[in-house]
Amino acid sequence: MAAGTALVTAIATDTWQQARAGAVALWQRVHPERAVAIEAELDRARAVLLAARRDGDVRTEGALADEWRGRLAQLVAADPDALAEIRRVLEQVWTPLLPPSERPAVRHITMHATATRSGRVYQAGGDQQITGP
Image (cartoon, rainbow, N blue to C red; front, side, top):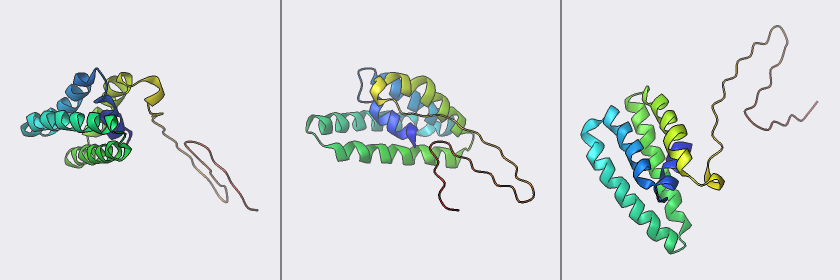
């Protein structure tokens, strides 16, 4: 989910061509026949996003982020190995293009636990609150 948001936010920056190039490279790998169309669609998305920001329209940015999250999810559905490439582009291309205040707090967390007998395991990737007896 962070990838779609980061991509849309990055295309609104002065270095948006790098954000676009990262996205086009993803499609080139999975659906090369769509790469040129994706490039044009990102150009359109940038124009729409800049107009929305100029007009104070915050809903459009959210809608664009939803749209690109969906497109990235479709890439992964077509090729599950694309997930690793999306993470790489997110971390190495899109996130560094964002102003520090807009960089998503993205982290990869892997947790493993084993409980035996009547043992309990409580794991959380962030805050955790346990209530009750």
